[in-house]
Image (cartoon, rainbow, N blue to C red; front, side, top):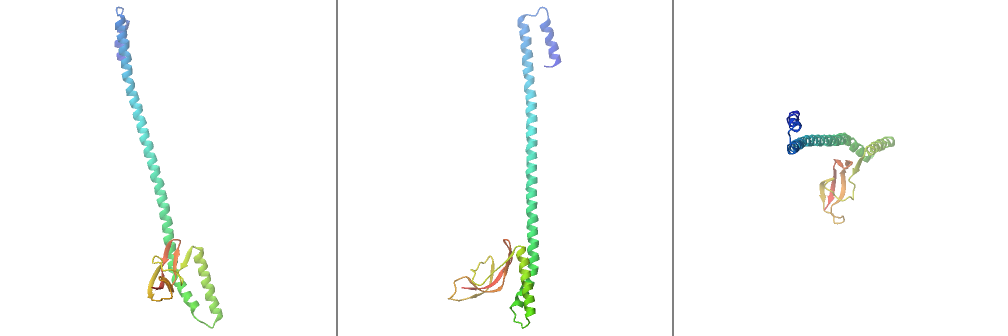
Length: 187
């Protein structure tokens, strides 16, 4: 209750000729006035609680957005790393192919042959260490997601969709295909 209301009501109660009814009415009015002020205080408190709850919600949303950004950024970095690694390996595959052809060539020089074999073994070891695997062997079942069929042959002695010959091995890094295997397939 404000000071003015108290001052205006106080003289009524202190007046010498005030009856008990008038005094009771004055006290009742004072109580009603105090009660009228309480909901304003409660509504202010409720308003502050609502604002606090909204700010907490905003904070949690911002924290979740940041966490999502961090995870997305991490995935993008890993994907970029895998893409760069796959591109680098793809640039070495012609060297692998040349070494494979050199090994298949007949030569009388045993030191030369041993040097090519050692170089090829070293290259295969490096590819294996970084997670690159070769695929596309004779007898495999043709898979269009991994093989590139450049020739088809009718052969009754072979099962349908069987790799008959491999012209160029395929390579993959994890689940990513770096190069498809070029094969001849039996129909």
